[in-house]
Image 1 (cartoon, rainbow, N blue to C red):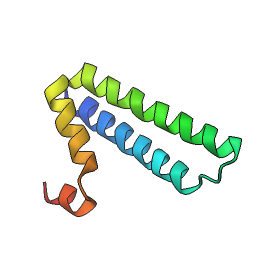
Image 2 (cartoon, rainbow, N blue to C red):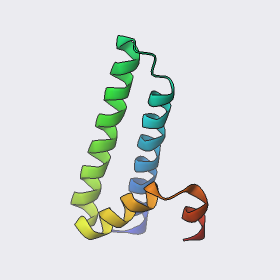
Image 3 (cartoon, rainbow, N blue to C red):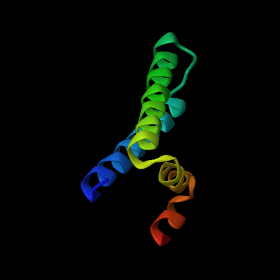
Image 4 (spheres, one colour):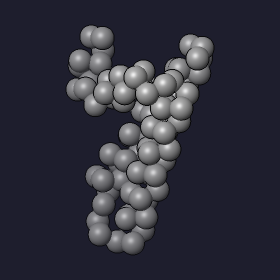
Length: 77
C-alpha cells in the first residue's frame, strides 16, 4: 500500500473515532442520539475492516492500537 492510501486510511479511522466519541458525548437516550451512535460505530467498524483488508492484519492491528494510545504517546511515536 502506498503512503497516500495509508495516510487516508489513518485519517478515516481517526475521523470515525472522533465521530463515535462525539456521539457518546451527546448521547441523551433519545432515538436520534442512539441512531447517530449506531451509525458512527458502524462507520468505525467499516474503517477497521478496510484497514484489515488493505493493510493486512498485522499492520492494521498496529494502526488501530496506535489510535487507542493516549494522544501524547501518539505524537512520540
